[in-house]
Amino acid sequence: MSLSTTDAGAFPLRPARGRRRPNTGVGSRPGFLAYGLLVATLLGFAYPIWWSFVVASGTNATRAETLPLLPGGNFWANAAQAMDAIPFWLALGNSLVVSSIITVSVVTFSTLAGYAFAKLRFKGRDGLMIFVIATMAIPTQLGIIPLFILMRELGWTGELGAVIVPSLVTAFGVFFMRQYLVEVIPDELIEAARVDGANQFRTFLNVAVPAARPAMAILGLFTFMAAWTDYLWPLIVLNPQNPTLQTALSQLQSGYYVNYSIVLAGAVLATIPLLVLFLAAGKQLIAGIMQGAVKG
Image (cartoon, rainbow, N blue to C red; front, side):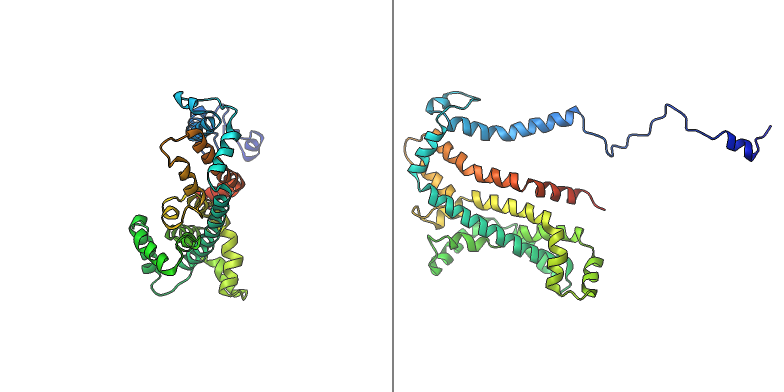
């Protein structure tokens, strides 16, 4: 006996119970193994900083321990000795000036150049981009001697300008911003801005800059860290009376007897600004990573 349309409506079909949807992995929470690997990685990266603080807060006897775990009570005394042994505050100010100017310059010029390579059409664009990428294959050490000769001819040796000017823009920054802006800014959005009467520079400010903020934060963080920890070029071009922080810290271990508690106390003090910057830029850093990972 067949069911009529009315009878079929009286017996609505229901999905079979007990069936589970296939697990596609989308939206699923990471398991214990993933969290365990993340915690182990975090501890592995954090231990050198903790070990430096432990040694910096102790005495030379602390170095006799293979794996010191607990800090002592001499950190501030060792830090005071480190600051008295070198021109610490002058070096700290020089590093802040150098790193800040280089960071602002690299982010600004890299964003401008990256936008031009990503969204503007001009003759020779691809060839210029290949040339910029090719410069990243040249080791920095090859240009130190010609660069030093140039700085000497300009009379900039011993001045902070000799450290700042050669690093005002980087090939990596241009390439990084170009790749980011290609993905996040559709051509239709730029055309819409031009239809509304915006010129090229206003389109860059109102369209490109808001979209590029996460990438600008990441590039700024990496640039500041690279400029802050740069040692070779400031050591060559600056003198001991006007050093950056990294070159000043090298003076703590220039004698026959090295007190590693004092040396690492200075290293910990030099690391604190980087930690503060990372915590301040952490939100933008995560936003940039997620923007690059999720599309659509």
